[in-house]
Length: 303
Image 1 (cartoon, rainbow, N blue to C red):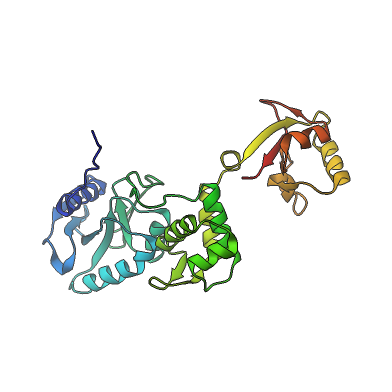
Image 2: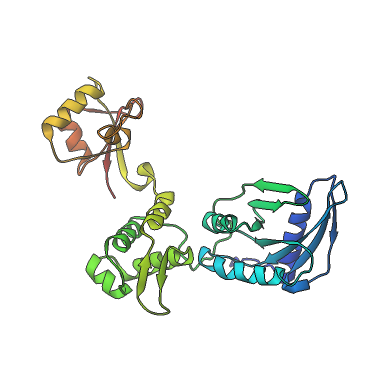
């Protein structure tokens, strides 16, 4: 039987998020429902501190908020809050809020919460501060959208997006970079949703946040999972191996602490990580022994 994903109605979503908010308030405080839909908000709460001081919290509930949507959401909640004669703390709420979305809301001094436990509630008078961390990934992602950048194809797409200078169209970039058009388009769509590039509607990409794109790609990248890694042992130790590598001079690329030590000695190197075209051939060339445990060398064949 085909599985069909259940979808909350808007009213059910508002109820769930309102219940989540009410449970966050300290037990010694009093929470009561305020006037519904006042000022365009989805749910209202009057919270009273033990000393009698009150503050009104207003929930703005969305089904989904991508980082690129944050400026519009901020404008909406600020306009709604301006209609109140008394102070109001707007709380942006959704089933899931990504790390970039949460960071953007926090930077704008706007409270937020989601159903996975990602929470930031702030009020000055009366003083209330609640923060917690929930899921890092959406537990119910859309099936028709790319969810991450961990694959070989998406890595090539990311490289193309940061190496070529915009403006460029998807088809043009695919031809110039040799990356499949479908992979490039899906990767660009993910980065667009996360606010890391700007494009015209049905037109070319005009701007790329190179640093942001690389950092986003790095979240899904893992040296051991994304590449073929052979664990090896240098019997004579790392200093002797370093001398061998100097003698070879080329045919490898050092990374990790060993690579960084050539520029800044941060900590003693206990594992030498080298990108090589053929791990077994390189191990034989240096007299390294491949092992299942106790290695001090990683030979990495890049994806």
